[in-house]
Length: 228
Image 1 (tube, one colour):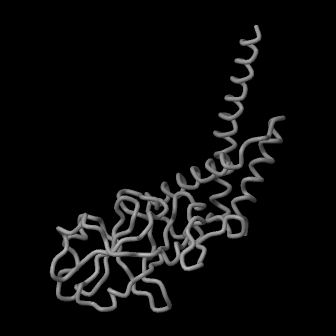
Image 2 (image 1 turned 30 degrees about the horizontal axis):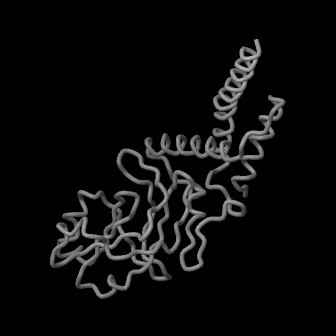
Image 3 (image 1 turned 90 degrees about the vertical axis):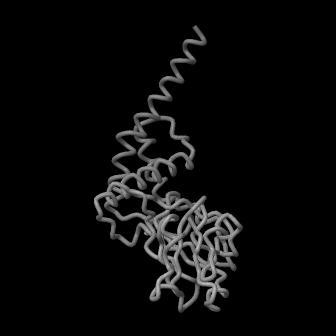
């Protein structure tokens, strides 16, 4: 399995083969790769054909705390809200739905948290058969969880795991909760399949390479004009 650094080096070799100047910042190439990856996944998800596990990453043991008062008007005698203590990395969104495969409380017997829209969260979970379920939604780069007030186990929720397709995979490396690292870009596989990489490499060669070379050529022409 290949890391993001391996893929960046492949692109650098391609640039060097077509251009004498190959000192392009690795962070720029990584942005190219992330952008093309996100575009490919969004196009596939729009058609309803996202199924490859390789695209997903897990944000592990994200800390949750009682929510601030922004949703106090939604609370009632049977429910309250928790929220992630930190903002979470951006999750890809297609047609108003976040590409989250699973969200659950951390631990061996984690309880599933159903992801819904912010609007639906206000009214869901009030029925006879679902009033003990957990519901979550993303708002303002945080994940909020609607929990039943009368469930003592809900009061013990301190951390959650989120399996999702994140827009910038490296962002997960900034999370180290309870000593657990969600992603190490220098060691962990970059979340794509071989098929997606073939697409990404082709798009970068067709678009980013030519754009990069054009910008460099414009810079050389400007230098010539300045010396004239």
